[in-house]
Image (cartoon, rainbow, N blue to C red; front, side, top):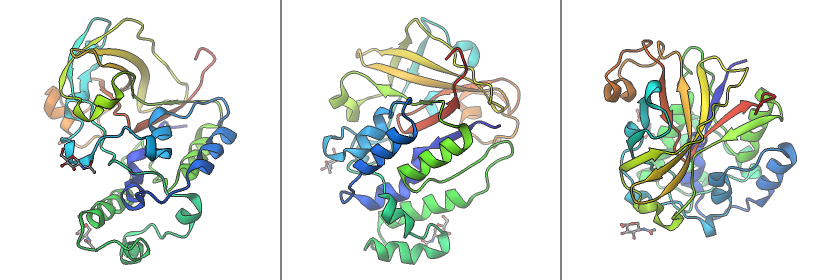
Length: 273
Ligand SMILES: *[C@@H]1O[C@H](CO)[C@@H](O)[C@H](O)[C@H]1NC(C)=O
Ligand SMILES: *[C@@H]1O[C@H](CO)[C@@H](O)[C@H](O)[C@H]1NC(C)=O
């Protein structure tokens, strides 16, 4: 079976729309019930409790991602990397409650109905984000990958468990210290501290392994980052930002990247992990 990256960011639609009116605790119970041995990632917990959220204000964000790519050979204890961890999820956003998700048409030709349902001005930035999200979701997956847009936490859990069962690692990146400082997290040098351990999963095709990687920033920010290394990049878009920043060609060398906090990876647990 193939590995699949379930990106929470795929549910932007709902984030943007929902603002504050979600009773999300049932979603949390749903997770615990379906995945009793898999802790809820911190970002998911934060999204379910937007009142206590430390997710940064959207207007403080920069374009994410480019700094987080690196070559596999450069990951080792003591390695120094210039990284910029940003969370692209807007403040106050949360998941769409399952009941509402079930009656929301998730399709580009239903965009006017969606906007109407949530009383969103079609000319607003929110409407644009929703449109973009739906267009992204309707793009076909690239070869060797599978794609699914979950419209609620419940549908994410259902999809994840249908593909991987209940014995799974669900990995993200977590900023462990200075949570209040998150909106100010700047691009800075991080050192990979020791204890890098690969999680190899039998069901991986396009991805080689995951590595939960402890990082310490120049400002002492501690991050438990998850690294994903892709062994085959031959099918990636040749214009992918990773090829530009690393100056390599598609399919030539394994490429790794740190997950941002709102990327989630599911992988079947092996005996060793
Ligand atoms: C977000 O940050 C901007 C700039 O720092 C500030 O002007 C704005 O009031 C903030 N918005 C919220 C909702 O906190
Ligand atoms: C949605 O986005 C697509 C592509 O970005 C654009 O062509 C289309 O006009 C947009 N639709 C609306 C209703 O804004």
